[in-house]
Image (cartoon, rainbow, N blue to C red; front, side, top):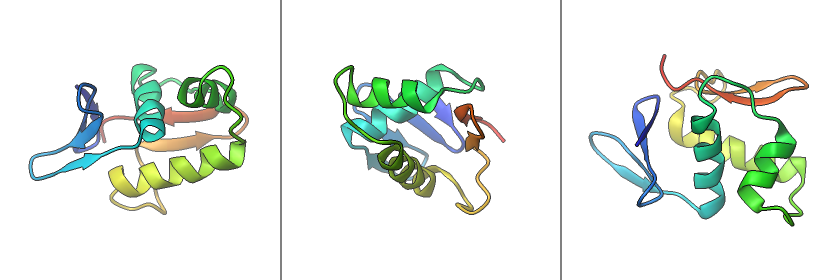
Amino acid sequence: MLLIGDWFLDSEREMLVNETSTIPLSRIQFRLLHCLAVHNGRPVSKANLIKYAWGEEGFATKNALYVYINRLRQLVEKDVKRPKHILCLRKEGYILYPKH
Protein backbone atom coordinates (compact mmCIF):
# COMPACT_ATOMS: atom_id res chain seq x y z
CA MET A 1 0.00 0.00 0.00
CA LEU A 2 1.14 3.53 -0.78
CA LEU A 3 0.54 6.43 1.62
CA ILE A 4 -1.30 9.55 0.44
CA GLY A 5 -2.08 11.95 3.28
CA ASP A 6 -4.36 10.13 5.71
CA TRP A 7 -5.10 7.51 3.06
CA PHE A 8 -3.46 4.37 1.76
CA LEU A 9 -3.69 3.38 -1.88
CA ASP A 10 -4.60 -0.30 -1.87
CA SER A 11 -3.19 -1.65 -5.14
CA GLU A 12 -4.91 -5.01 -4.92
CA ARG A 13 -8.44 -3.62 -4.55
CA GLU A 14 -7.80 -0.29 -6.35
CA MET A 15 -9.20 1.68 -3.43
CA LEU A 16 -8.32 4.48 -1.08
CA VAL A 17 -8.42 3.26 2.51
CA ASN A 18 -8.12 5.03 5.86
CA GLU A 19 -8.99 4.11 9.43
CA THR A 20 -12.72 4.64 8.99
CA SER A 21 -13.62 4.21 5.32
CA THR A 22 -12.78 2.90 1.89
CA ILE A 23 -13.33 4.64 -1.42
CA PRO A 24 -13.39 2.61 -4.62
CA LEU A 25 -11.57 4.31 -7.49
CA SER A 26 -12.18 4.16 -11.19
CA ARG A 27 -9.42 2.53 -13.21
CA ILE A 28 -8.20 5.96 -14.42
CA GLN A 29 -8.25 7.45 -10.90
CA PHE A 30 -6.29 4.50 -9.56
CA ARG A 31 -3.69 4.66 -12.33
CA LEU A 32 -3.17 8.40 -11.87
CA LEU A 33 -2.69 8.09 -8.11
CA HIS A 34 -0.51 5.02 -8.52
CA CYS A 35 1.75 6.79 -11.02
CA LEU A 36 2.09 9.82 -8.76
CA ALA A 37 2.72 7.64 -5.70
CA VAL A 38 5.39 5.58 -7.45
CA HIS A 39 7.20 8.82 -8.33
CA ASN A 40 6.84 9.95 -4.70
CA GLY A 41 7.84 13.61 -4.44
CA ARG A 42 9.07 13.85 -8.03
CA PRO A 43 7.11 15.63 -10.77
CA VAL A 44 5.39 13.61 -13.47
CA SER A 45 4.65 15.35 -16.76
CA LYS A 46 1.07 15.66 -17.92
CA ALA A 47 1.96 13.66 -21.04
CA ASN A 48 3.38 10.81 -18.94
CA LEU A 49 0.34 10.79 -16.64
CA ILE A 50 -1.99 10.59 -19.63
CA LYS A 51 0.09 7.81 -21.18
CA TYR A 52 0.17 5.85 -17.90
CA ALA A 53 -3.54 6.26 -17.08
CA TRP A 54 -5.09 5.96 -20.53
CA GLY A 55 -2.46 3.76 -22.19
CA GLU A 56 -0.21 4.17 -25.20
CA GLU A 57 -3.13 4.72 -27.54
CA GLY A 58 -5.07 6.87 -25.08
CA PHE A 59 -6.61 9.95 -26.56
CA ALA A 60 -7.22 11.84 -23.35
CA THR A 61 -6.70 15.58 -23.33
CA LYS A 62 -4.95 17.69 -20.73
CA ASN A 63 -8.41 18.98 -19.83
CA ALA A 64 -9.57 15.42 -19.04
CA LEU A 65 -6.46 14.99 -16.88
CA TYR A 66 -7.29 18.23 -15.05
CA VAL A 67 -10.82 16.99 -14.32
CA TYR A 68 -9.55 13.68 -12.94
CA ILE A 69 -6.88 15.38 -10.83
CA ASN A 70 -9.52 17.67 -9.33
CA ARG A 71 -11.72 14.68 -8.51
CA LEU A 72 -8.78 12.98 -6.81
CA ARG A 73 -8.05 16.12 -4.81
CA GLN A 74 -11.63 16.07 -3.55
CA LEU A 75 -10.94 12.61 -2.17
CA VAL A 76 -7.52 13.10 -0.54
CA GLU A 77 -7.23 16.78 0.32
CA LYS A 78 -8.66 18.36 3.45
CA ASP A 79 -8.87 21.74 1.67
CA VAL A 80 -9.24 21.37 -2.10
CA LYS A 81 -8.51 25.06 -2.64
CA ARG A 82 -5.18 24.69 -0.84
CA PRO A 83 -3.94 21.23 -1.82
CA LYS A 84 -1.01 19.80 0.08
CA HIS A 85 -0.70 16.39 -1.53
CA ILE A 86 -1.47 16.62 -5.25
CA LEU A 87 0.14 19.74 -6.65
CA CYS A 88 0.52 21.17 -10.13
CA LEU A 89 3.99 22.39 -11.02
CA ARG A 90 3.82 24.88 -13.82
CA LYS A 91 5.37 23.53 -17.03
CA GLU A 92 6.41 20.32 -15.24
CA GLY A 93 3.22 18.41 -14.49
CA TYR A 94 1.91 17.07 -11.19
CA ILE A 95 3.64 15.95 -8.04
CA LEU A 96 2.46 13.97 -5.04
CA TYR A 97 3.60 14.81 -1.53
CA PRO A 98 2.26 11.83 0.40
CA LYS A 99 2.81 13.21 3.93
CA HIS A 100 2.19 16.63 5.47
